Length: 89
Image (tube, rainbow, N blue to C red):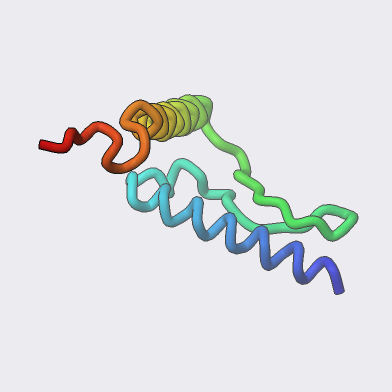
């Protein structure tokens, strides 16, 4: 039954998001967060009805997280391979 696999994937995604929202004390802003499946059995995560302010905050958090990830990647690339910047004395 493919829909079971889809729902299980959606459940993992919803649980992961719920965990992060709890860590930020935002779980009450997403009361309709739940796993579901569409008509073809693909897993989907429903956020439910969400206040515009909560969506704006979520957008800012995602943007900040992506910015940090990009900055870390650039720092690693600029540093080069391990030992590339050390000089032999």
